[in-house]
Image (cartoon, rainbow, N blue to C red):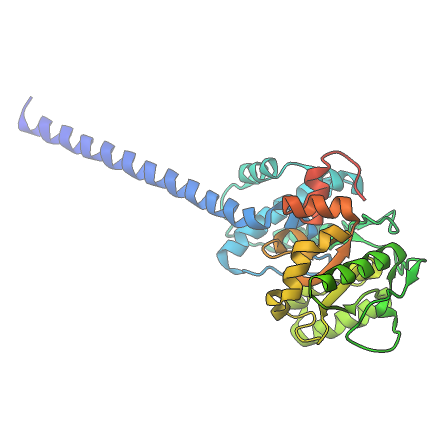
Length: 334
Ligand SMILES: [Zn+2]
């Protein structure tokens, strides 16, 4: 073996080492990219994907991550569009989160750079199909009814047992927004009385709301804040819990911070968070659960579900969505 042989061997060795190293780092990067995609999606998960506002077509974070997430959505949409009926879609909702994320991981091939016309048309189509994937609630009068961005009340549904709860409100007169379903109204009266015994004075701010009223409100919010922002705090007409007569926005008796973020720090909000379940109410849109409920934290929006479910939700730190998807794993929704 002469020096030329040794040199050639050395060069070969270096080439091998370099190619192994670059191969490893590529693999690592690939995995990292994927786990980024998954963890980005993780928070919003399939639930948020499924409860995405039917009309909204907005993502909070555009950019490259957005593109990647879009491509996941697209894959998800394509998968969904093969499911022809709503029952099939409900089934997807009930599937285990981990499995869903794993499926996404499997389906993500590479970040998609090209956006040919063909592809975007396809995306639009499957988005449209997804938008149409709204479940119309079959038993809107059920006390446990689940109304959200994915589950819509029948058009212009109005409960037939609305009454005026005998409690204090932050406004006078007898507008319809004082009303609640009878069972919820009685529970509200008991809750206000219970709070009073603890030195907490509550007042109603907004109860029943017809679909027509919701439409006016929603449109005014969209005009004021834009659609993306409005969709985080205001329901699309037909999708509001206020239309069920089972929800009441509650404030302190001075009406300060009524339906505002600052209510969260008030003694009234703290009392409600701690005790409302004893009377059958839940804080329907808790902090940190926007990706599940579809709405930002609303410490004032109380929903009547009955003491049994309210207590289970309270003790497990659930949302109503989680209660139906986790606590009741098989059919039996609504
Ligand atoms: Zn509300």
